[in-house]
Length: 433
View: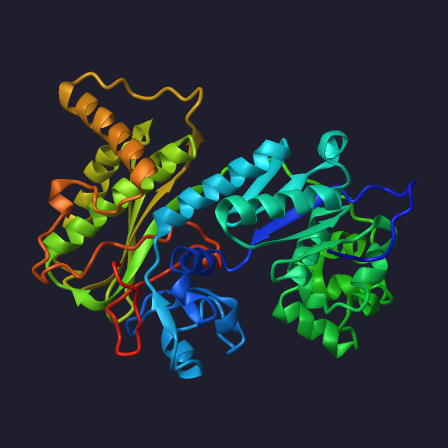
């Protein structure tokens, strides 16, 4: 364990932790297949348009990063091992991680599939100091799930996140309150969320490249460089920020999309993809205890032309059948002008909490049957994690007609975005996949 300075007994407790799973998708694949240990492993699509969704640390030493085109990753590592993503599998493991955190800490704010903030001040009486709690969580994740994680701790969420990044891989860094300003001073201003490339350039023009230098410039100069967030950034830079966990706000929308290496020209295949995506979005709604009144269809042609169409109805739903009934007609109306499709996406918008929202009664037998069926499918997917389970209309015999199952990208974080394609000549895959 690394610790930035010594905390005195009367010092303010750095009770905000940020836990981040290290190279989450890639770490899961290496855990599941030990033959990959030590190899440059990436999760993502291996086709011409594939991108890296996650990279193992051996791959990162070659310069490979998330969101990099797979073609570039192959040039950096000719022995690259490309593993197709298993989003449902990662979601299930993420849920287990969060359950494990909840065994120890009551106040948790999950911010993506592989990271969460924790306020551990209330857990000190049972589990000890923040660094002891962090070690306990990391040890349990390692022993029970076989996965590495890194934790940063501080008096504020922003510094805790910076600390966890500095602790990677598989490390722990607690920043005592009295040492916060000193810890931040030598770091580049780019580590502060809200200081993007343009702001970095503006600060560099006046000789500011580190957080310590940022603290020395006039407030007016900082405001010109970063805009209205100047007071917030200055509070972080001088160590006075005390922002803790926020009230979790629900996403305004959620969805999934996929890019194909070869254009889709068969309307039935496009319809299959849309139907699968509608079912996946509905599962996300049910998992998040939210409902929607609007579904959005996104289509992109090979020349880059992109259209979005939406449908809104009166009664909210989390049913895949209801979404399919709304979104498939949107595609049918565009078939004549969108004869070749490169990208398809389905998104639910205008989300509302399911609790307390009046949902239309399922009065007819057909609708009630779909409701029961989708509940049964949720239970089966949760238990077995299989992606072969789906509607009969979306399952195609393995005769080469279908390019493979739709691969979902339901979360905005880099670890959860993937665009798989056809296997390329440099792809090495594991047996049994």
